[in-house]
Image 1: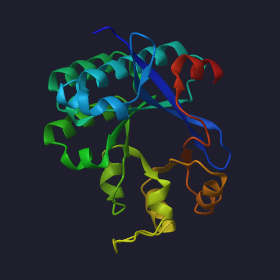
Image 2 (image 1 turned 45 degrees about the vertical axis):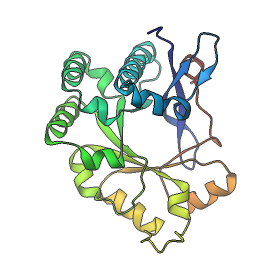
Image 3 (image 1 turned 180 degrees about the vertical axis):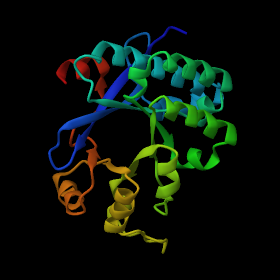
Length: 238
């Protein structure tokens, strides 16, 4: 109600150059005395109170404002925006948002909707139709929070998914529970054929980078390359 939801950005860098090519947008809630509340602290409460959609909507609008501010000097930089299934199922909001973006096509081409793997599997036919309308406007999509590497790259590519974000622990660590494991080279090959870029996230050590480079992954994200920072600070530095 006090409009204290701030936009933070974390760089996504190309490999091996480590050049910032994209940013991921995060929401942070600021208390009346200036303290920052992270998603890990507020998500469960927000779910209980039915506020996830509201937070999503505010984050989207913050991103739109940032895109307008940086349109002339950062037109090669894209912004990944997480969007929950709560918002995707909000037909009224999505209809208005699609209409807004239809009148602002230059913004749509720089905003990438990020949807979790679990949510992708649960999307209704109506939501898929809305995603199709967004793709016609230039939107592309990313799948994150990947837990299962048995991914249908072809189907995702056909629905304009152009990025998949995989935590480094999932691709470089053999599971102890006997679960199936996809070799990183196989994962990279499948993504390349489907023209989907792989983003290896949660990279925190130089040793991790050496392993990632060995398999030719496209992008990296993690504290090693930069922590989330307030959007104005990141936008001014880029």
